[in-house]
Each structure stands twice: as C-alpha cells, then as structure tokens.
Image 1 (cartoon, helix red, strand yellow):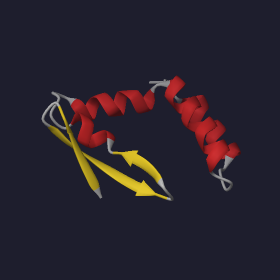
Image 2 (image 1 turned 90 degrees about the vertical axis):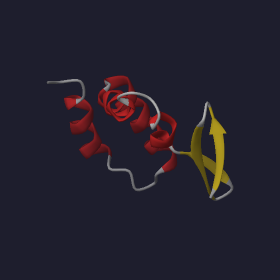
Image 3 (image 1 turned 120 degrees about the vertical axis):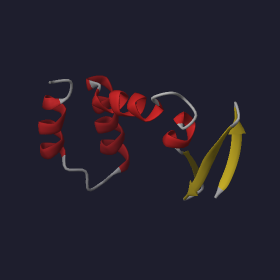
Length: 77
C-alpha cells in the first residue's frame, strides 16, 4: 500500500489489478465532521445513481433489482 500526503493528511493508495484506489475516509480524517460528510454524500440520490451505473459497468454480478429498491429510497427521511 502506498501513501501520499495532501494538506497534511496521509492518504492510502491501494492498487488492485493495476488500478489505483484512494481512501475517502483518509481524505476527510482531518476535516471537522469529515465522516459525516461522507455519510451525507452517500445518501445523496445522485451519488446512489452514479454508484449503480458504476457497479453495472464493472460488476458482472450486480443485483439490479435489489439496487432499484435502494435507489428509490435514497434521499428519503
């Protein structure tokens, strides 16, 4: 695992199948309420739709029917 430092935050970089992935939690660790920021982002309907498209492209076992139920609930209180 490699690491980079951005604005005094050490961010983990993980390589899988010659592709790099960064840790979102590392990115917000030094920000006030950073984890809450990620939680809010993950509840956003646009984010959920993006993740569904991403999974549909890259995950051959993606469960589209189950995802539709999750997507329909996104953004609801």
